Image (cartoon, rainbow, N blue to C red; front, side):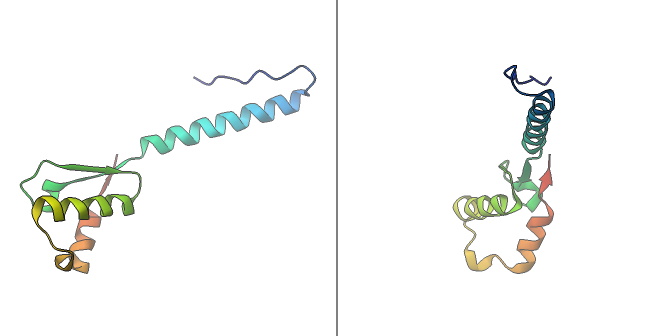
Length: 95
């Protein structure tokens, strides 16, 4: 439910409407952005691992996935071929 902004009486009706429309736009935009989180499940990449990597962008997921792969699965940076990177990008899901 939207909360409308109380506007001082000296502002015109049009200004009040505009302020409320801006508030509704920002509220909707924030809500939508919060709902679109990206995830990558390590087991989907072929590992026997229950880790789920979450982030707001594909780049953030890839960065976290690289760190996880090096730390938990002893994958070296030179092992990350363009083909493997592309495969992992394809496993990222929006939720």
